[in-house]
Image (tube, rainbow, N blue to C red):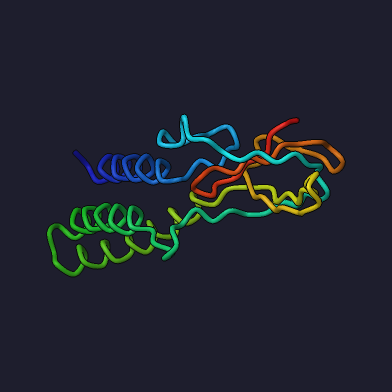
Length: 156
């Protein structure tokens, strides 16, 4: 197998691995443990909507799949280019790790919407969720808050 085919295969595997890392922020997506869980629902009206960017990295900012996947792919490519030499292999791994981390960070970013909801009980609640369903100011909605604290907005 020549270098071009090896590189294409490495890129394909890395891209498939990294795209599976993005968290789904859709208001229609439920994690399996939440199914059947009782939630508290509040009635309200949308007061404000604004576009936001949701960074999908975990609390520590870790991008481990990109780091290790990119490092492995870069090391393999560097090894192939350098015909087994230690320096090209190490340089390829380092460049791949940095590149993989950057790619994963970019892939984990998603468009979201921040809603401010005036609740019928007089309070205000702010909820950020995916941009798959858009609500407009003045629109009556329900804010559903799960036991774990995850909230979502749905039509009333």
